[in-house]
Length: 253
Image (cartoon, rainbow, N blue to C red; front, side, top):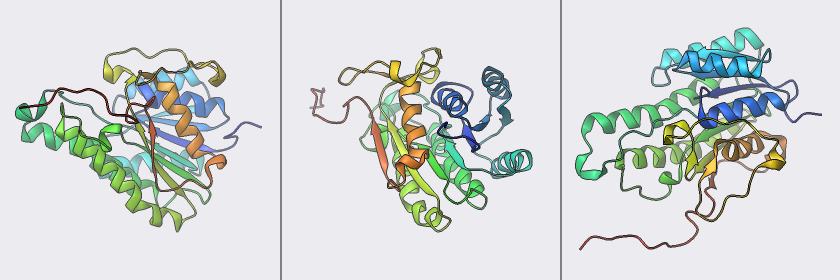
């Protein structure tokens, strides 16, 4: 039997990258998938790629009403919600601390931290017992990415948000975990979306190499599945060993 047969899954940031890969893989594993994104045309394209088991939803994750409307759409259409993959995010400028301005910092925190908070608030009252939530953080939530203090701060916040939210979701019989990807070849990083492979055909990534969107999506599927029933409230590193060892780096005077 498929891993998510008869389950209803919501994926934000589903128009491209990790979200697209996850939406396709959830559907391949039997789920009814809702592909949500600010880019509705992109979400509709992914939904069409999946077929009849998918629907597209427009959402602005920094807006509370938009998050609630997204979840209401799922409940009105499918009658239930079993898995929420809150994946939408924003990378922003990579020009260092000196160039970082208040507006850019505020935008990063709004999308990457407030957005997941509002998403969690929207799904919490309705997600089914036995369900799961997965939130995309980053290895920048564990270390300092000197190119972007704002991105780093937002992703540190996501990990704290997931840990702090675990008891509230556990009270509903729901698990919640974060994923911390390292370098991933996605449109956000300037790469193109690629065809989804059978999982057993995914290539092993060399030490500190870049993974594919599907490499991360497969971890999201596992975390959302019953196989991860003993896994809750944690940040899971998916980075080909990027953060495992010290590497030479330039330092200041």
